[in-house]
Length: 442
Image (tube, rainbow, N blue to C red; front, top):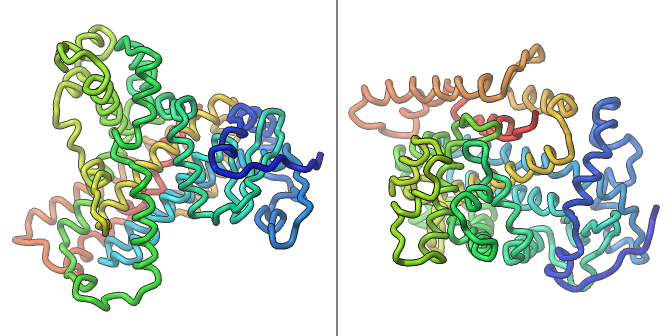
């Protein structure tokens, strides 16, 4: 039913009007369509061309069908995330070719799509200059006064989300280690709710994803996208094949290696360690050492996890090192790392929403089958046991083959020389593999 939406004047009020529960209920209601019709939206869905339908330059007396728009926003959660991983994969393709400019352009758009997926999971659709929140009972609210364009609106809304002590807890429940969410690990460590909320609000800084630096990434993207390449000496710096190509590709895969936790990745343990460390350092008694603090998890965490958490090198992961880079002009590695972390988090939140709505892998088969075919991950005769078992071995094999060949070289040499080794190994930059095992949907 079309109704006149409520209007608000800023990103904080728009986010407050949104309901993640309404989005979960919408996803639950879409399950029959996914099974029977094998499509996210109906053929005549009123919001199939949503930006055109909501165009503020053409539509002044706006009415919105909240239930139908909620369907579009709900469907966009996994789709934005998957598109973000596709942008990241193309960014790494550009890195392999020594093209930093294009890599920055594409990695920034990977960040943007991750942000839009996160906002959609909370019930907010970012549609050029018409941004809509879906509230309880699918009631629509519009950012009506001086709304920003897609890019600025996304980061303003994410900033509002990060400062909301309730909503930001979503992140602590979206990442699992040994079948427990980070929130559950906080409970096991006897961290109070007030302390958890405080740590959760600080997660962006604590985990090296300070949103202020995405704005710098955008400015850097503008420079790399719209200014002529190599016009200054700095722009013409020779590519360091080890630092600029090999390390970003190989070490990012280190972070994304599937874990034994369904829908998990290796980097999740680092996220847990950093979250617990933040709680210990900032909010617990200074008399309790880190070693004593970890004893709170004795008998709950496995011995392997206990040892990993006790190792200070857990905080020194390559992706976090670069994601925390605060340079005014960020290096391409920093943009790639921030995109990787934000996409990991967006994928975790997406998986949580789908699981809560009861959406199964089989119900989404029509989508992920075509996604994998189009990305060149498999042919049309796929026999799926698990995405991790199907997709990870190729990555391992390609990395091991490359490392053996690189060991025989005195130096890696020029991009051309490296291309002879990396070029035939197509799995190396197929980061479209990662969102499939990160779905975590039965």
